[in-house]
Image 1 (cartoon, helix red, strand yellow):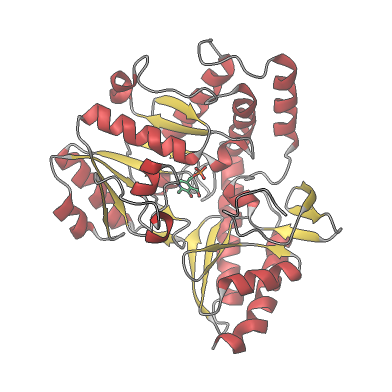
Image 2 (cartoon, protein in one colour; image 1 turned 180 degrees about the vertical axis):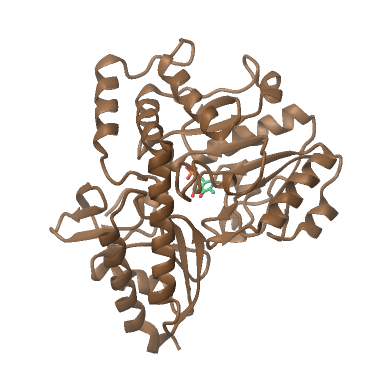
Length: 385
Ligand SMILES: Cc1ncc(COP(=O)(O)O)c(C=O)c1O
């Protein structure tokens, strides 16, 4: 028997090793991995520059606490600030903790409590971020939620205008809703959100936990639009698999996060931070981002050509290397058959196959994935219709 709480619907695969875009199971079966550990291993599995940085840090010190000066944290914070155009960083251990920190900071800085988020959003599983999340299934059975969170329809600027007021501390949103089904925000909606926030003195928090660190072909997805958030939250891809999250906030917010206002024992631990520095030094290079953007465009276009008109495919959506294939059939069944054929992909929302491949995958790997998807969707289409 397993002594693990059955909180996850685990697959039948047990990894023995993983390298680049491939993962090998204990039974020797090889998989093309388009999950990247759910948008985490953005440089593929075990990128050598991250391994080198982490092993170097392992030989220096592992943990000392945030009572000490830590040059490695300063270096990571500078990279985040420069890449985002924001100013100050707080390090956490996960995405949910980053969103917790952002919500706390927005409440403290504004002296207000209300936070507006969107239907189908996902912001985490802690008590606060669960309340922020706009999906009932995440909240079922956990009793009364925090009342200061309000959820409104995504891509609906009018709904926001009606809800936002002088009590609103912040609006939190994903530029592309990841868990909610790869739903891309329109640029008109995003400009209207920013304008409404300015008008009412509310802060704009962009949750870049899934979309950030190069996933969409820019350092952060908000940079595709002319947006100026007050806070962004980052995690997943930041540490290439080492647990780390961060918020990056504007200079005006510095005073609200003074000594003793927030903290975390492990947040900013040097092992994860060294992984983050090596990851960012690679991904934030303009040449790397351009290649990721080109590869994203290639995957998106080819997915449209090859899969777009298949029976059972309803839409292809996304941006960069965050691609959703909306299908009429059963997603779990489709993903299971895909695994049998040697490829790993993710579900999102109700009926979306989500592809989050490494940003540095090859064109050959993209073609191979699309062939496997075509075979799988075609094999299941008659049963779905
Ligand atoms: C957009 C977004 N926000 C927050 C989270 C929560 O991050 P974590 O699981 O690291 O707590 C996730 C995780 O899927 C996410 O996709």
